Image (cartoon, rainbow, N blue to C red; front, side, top):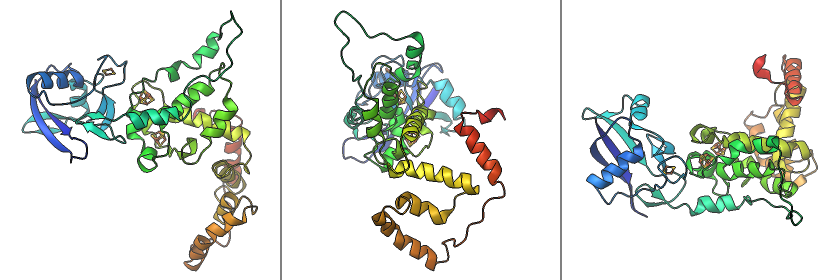
Length: 330
Ligand code: SF4
Ligand code: SF4
Ligand code: FES
């Protein structure tokens, strides 16, 4: 069958432009097959990365029809089914562009150095004393089982490309790095949990930088579910830190405490408790005063608080979640 491939081409500092190619392909061909055919038959200057052709090496990730994916995993028939209305001059169209959040080297190849730097920032290796001579590290099947899904990450960059937090906050280490961080926290051989949790407990670079947009879970070709892994790290931090320890921790704890107390957030207290650390941080309070005054002057600052009529139900639900209940079954 004949399709049109619309490929975003670009050189460093150059403006991106779209080049269209007609291609006769088998519907079962992968996008990578199409690109290889195109390069061999029509345009040897087209640049992209690939290696294993089999969803193992992670090097062929690119933006296909608008979302980050592996070119060797997605095939023509699947793309046409998912985007039936995408046509031009009577031909079905498939688009390809380089990964986002990374500088373009040429066409579909991006510079991966920032991705590796961010991974390095979470110390992505076991930190442990060597076992006594003649012995080895041992794990039970259950301990090993914990690492299975996390170990499947092929470091393709699809999650990094779609990460909304990374787009606006270059210091955020990204979903791939935090998924790896959880893989190490979940490894019974690693002995650096306390140090790791302290490092990952950052509002900017660490777990609190994630905006929970779900995109990384959505695009990961290996079902690593990075956002879920970030959630597990947050739970561990929240379980061991007090509200006084840091603003991100206080933000979560104050939110839950206020909703438990009144069914919804008492906005008069929220800012003062979180930023002002329950009136202990006078500098923090001073920093929100101008905003508070502006709200007051414009009639936006609530002077009174009316608890929700459903406060008891909300409180009971929160307590059940805190006790580990699965509310999806109720
Ligand atoms: S977590 Fe998934 S999407 Fe992200 S780098 Fe690993 S395999 Fe790719
Ligand atoms: S859920 Fe968090 S880490 Fe994942 S893509 Fe969204 S902001 Fe990034
Ligand atoms: S070429 Fe290796 S994952 Fe696609």
